[in-house]
Every structure is written in C-alpha cells, then in structure tokens.
Image (cartoon, rainbow, N blue to C red; front, side, top):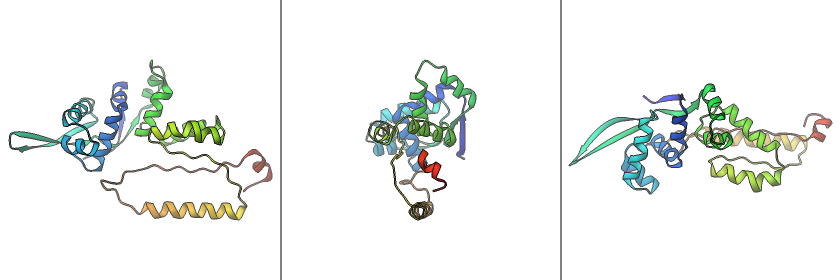
Amino acid sequence: MVKKIMYLETIEQVRALMEPSRERILRELGGGATTAKEIAQAMGQSVPRIHYHLKELKIHGLIRATKKVQKGNLTETHYEPAARAFRSKTSLEDALRNSPESYRDVLTRALLLGLTSLEDRVVEVVNLIEESDPETFQEAIRPSLLENGLNAEMTDLFLTQEEYEAFHADYQALITRYKKNRKSRKRRAVEMFWMSLPDAEALKAGPL
C-alpha cells in the first residue's frame, strides 16, 4: 500500500530525487505506469536508461517492486512509488543548508517534489515576491519557477470593493469546479495557494 507521505531521512535520498528524469518517473508511477517499458514510452527515453533511474530510486527506498511478470524469455518488474508525497525532516533541512550545494538551488528542486511543507513553499514564493516588483517577477523570476514546475503570478489589479468580491467569488467557483475531478493517469495532484496583498496606500485606506 502506498503511503500518503514519506519523510526523507538522508541527503542522499534528496539528491536521488533531484534528477529531473526521476521526478518525471515518480509522476508516471503515480499516474498509473508501472513498468520500465511503460515509463520509457511515456517519457520518450530508452528502457535501459529508465531501468538505471528505477534502480537508483529503489536503492534509496523511494520506489518498490510490487510484482514480476514472465513474458517469454523476459521478466517484467512492476513498480510503485513509496509514497504519494515526500517531505524532509527539519533536521534534514538543517543539513541541506550546511551542504556544499546552494541551499536555494536544492530548495527550488525540493519545492517541485513537495519535499518541503506547503507553508515553507508559500514562504519561499512570498519572499521572491517581496524581493521584486511585478515586472521583474514576470520577466526574470516566474520563468525560473516554471522551469522547476512551479507556477506563480504577480500583477497589480485596481478594484473596487464590489469588483474585488466578484473576483474572489469567481476564483472560488473555479476552484470548486476543478475540485470535483478525480485522480487519473492524466491528472495529478496540484497544491494551490492564492493570496491578495493590498499595497501600503490601500492598507491606510482600510479594508478592501
């Protein structure tokens, strides 16, 4: 049975997940693919290459073999992820900060994999927002986030109280619509966070 969350205990486990191909393999396993051949077809890569990555993931306890099926002279192994989501322990995050690698680079990859808590991911994105203006965020920061599987928007809207309430109602309706979806091979879990931040002048004027 696949765990809901697996807490990583070593830096080696985190590094094993940092390889982009392995991130994709975990997604494919979570989406229904179970064999090296199925994953290779979905990713457009060779079966031997996928076998190599599966071996590394298995060594570090991030996936496990569920069964072996004999097909002619070949034995086909089926796999499943060890968990639906991976998180790092606080002690491990401290160790990462002291590792030779850039902590921000490691954290950026970790954000994609859900290694850190949702709260930590929100704080990281908010910090990026606070360090930039909308134009810089859209042109320089957002493309980097997108490359790492994250999607964040930063823009200025000028709204009346009524318009703000209508905007929020539309957003809630959109979320409600897609929350009805069920997990499938083509659908994966996406954690959503939305926040509106009034500027200093708006704060002085009172609640929006």
